[in-house]
Length: 140
Image (tube, rainbow, N blue to C red; front, side, top):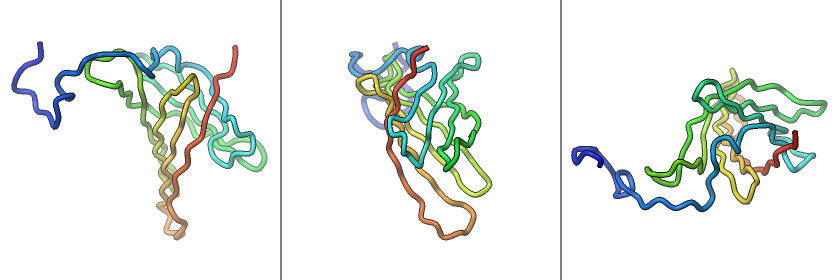
């Protein structure tokens, strides 16, 4: 039973009826995920792994020739409610000298949906932009 003195902004911050609809066991996220669009100008592929108990996302940006290794970022993991053991979504961030990229991801019908929020910090006057792309897990 949760203590009565916990702070909250809505009822589901304290108690929520658990049901499983879209989420995944965290282990189902592990592995290599390729962008379904081979002509993307965004993220070409991602690798999801564990480091201890932490979930990491390693991203590779699509370049004109090959890929750019972004490195790994620690994921903040979210469930559908406070009682669910399933992963419904995750967020992480990559900070480069010229831009910050915040990533929000979730699973739907076995496909990983990745949203990226791209903010330039270099004074170039390039507009910040958003993208949403879809990734399928590779076999093996």
